[in-house]
Length: 421
Image (cartoon, rainbow, N blue to C red):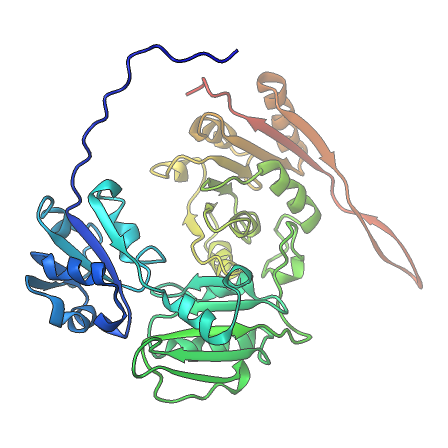
């Protein structure tokens, strides 16, 4: 049955008038702007932007031109302090593709803002090369580690990367060569959209361009050599890809462990007894929004975990050197916890259970009888699931082969009830 709602209609609240305009501007300056974007600049009492942006728009600025403070004010306090006045912020290309618009709209209600985006340098690069953006990995290495490109290095892939400065293309080319992708086609696109625009093409291993414009974008057509270090999309990466001392969760167990941890968008993992960092690394590889903190008492292993994180393209892995559970103090609340080492030590399991977010997931692996006994007891008290994992690998027996069993692993997986603090 359909019936008409007979209640009192909601009173429409008056929206605040926009006071802030964000104008994306390219290297072609005012000539590339639509009329309404130019009018927003002309009407502004104060115009914020980088020195280059202010120079590009100088003929339209009638108010105060205010360059960004150094160091850059990530809190945008100067802009927010002018709320209610007519303010314009100049940005490179599309302000919402790794741009200042993202920062501003964390602080200002979108209804108070009008945005006039211009094509991003990524879009311009794709148009120059004839690449479909939906089929291209688009990443920002501006002010970030170039190791972030590593997970995207697959044969046949296309990558467009924003860079930081004139030195970045050579560093990226060197990374490709050392990772086994030296024959990849390497496009250097400089000052896109402006009078200095230039495109040069070579291979990564032959990169030797001089006088690189600091405003550049790198585009790569990935070609993998026989020795290429390709990071699979699947969980349970080859153990040989990791630097380790033998104390690590092996690939088959790791694959099941990641499945039990069940990564979800934006979540934080604690990897207790991080060792080589393999669990935290594969957690972060699942999606760019995921974060992980490794807790490792051995300094040498902690440093090794960080080297592995860089080599796998997840340099954001945070490794805390300390002994659990004392090392938990001050850490942000985790959505998931993995206990792979040291779980039988006093207070570790209890501390992890206490720290875990309600509704969060805890997975613990045991290879010793002592740790297994703790997991059996925990499961009898708290519930959850227990599985036993046994793996055998073929290995030489004289001139033939036989199965050699690895130590069995008992795994407890538990979800903390949402009504438990």
